[in-house]
Length: 391
DNA sequence: AACGCGTGGGA
DNA sequence: TTCCCAAGCGT
Image (cartoon, rainbow, N blue to C red; front, top):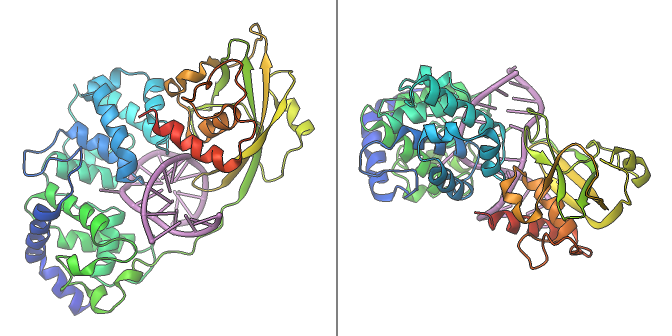
């Protein structure tokens, strides 16, 4: 460590006091947060931290409230079925989190009498709880000293110590810096203070250094490179995959859905049946043998574009009606009750393209013919509205 | 260790 | 419009 960095680390107690003072004045008011009070319920800390993994506060807010209303304790959550939990998680993304959340709840409720473990080491053994989340629960939920290292903390430390090596290789070093600056007092508040500083002041682009309690100690600011840190590895282009989705409507207006495999992309979520998703475009004639049943499949104008974490998807949609006796594998869903099902955003877009936005006058009506002139753009926007309207 | 894994909002 | 992401975890 350079002498400059050594001196910075030696200023730990003063920096900790300044950070906590800043938090007392500027800390955000969030549904899962208790400012200036006792430690919050570890269940609530855990629930919010899992939802916040790689996800914005704005996206989490309503989901958190819904979960807490439906399931006020970890035992309530553990008593729900996986399908119920997935249906309520639908739209939030990274669905392995929901599967792990359910498994973790069952473990805590039924193997530990509803009490979360307090130590990072024990927390780490639970499904969906890694190094960050374990430290967050230990500090925020139990008041134990723990070094919380998430994306915000990495960014703050990279700037404070003017660390120019790129992530993720430098992660361990940034963790060492974070440990050197973590004070002994008020562990939960300090952890949350760093989150808030990262979201309000030390932001990825255009940091507001004038508002930062650490601005006079920041080696990145002193060097004039704070805004450029942390260095990021070059991004790789996402490939495009293409497929054909089959929206099958029964005479009574219900729609055929299927459950996806338990793991992998959108694992255990519901879907509209479709072909494989591959790089080559599909011919209608080539796609038809993949349809769930023989029927008069008609193209729906427009297409669904959706971006996953690692590829773009373009789905064209075929639609057909079938007699009520048709025997196919899957579930016949009432289109007026789509939020009862664990439908990821991409599948909501498919149904919106085929039928129009849920909640419109004819939406879900057996004879409706909405969406006949939908463009891909309107399908995307309508899909967002449909999801937003369910919360 | 590197990669697979979603989504909606903001610049 | 297009790009960039945001409080990571599991394998």
